[in-house]
Length: 104
Image (cartoon, rainbow, N blue to C red; front, top):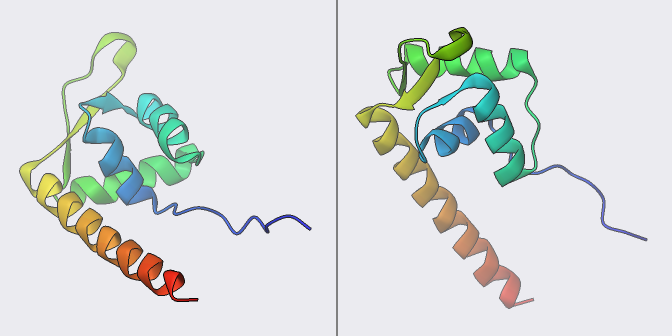
């Protein structure tokens, strides 16, 4: 019997911020990058809903539209700080969980 597919970490906001940590991207490029790095495919509604919330909170900002009207986004300084804090917290949890598993 194989392992059940319980999903992967897939918080759209964190995935979007992590994608934008490598540089500015438009929506479709973000979606493709997330699928590449996290094996998670976000739907367009989920993607753009999360992008809107991230913009509202000042964690990302839209830039002027580029070719074919595609609008790139980039992390703000607040977004960098927020993402770093979230990843450090996840790292601490992963370290603790692995340490506990080692005692089994």
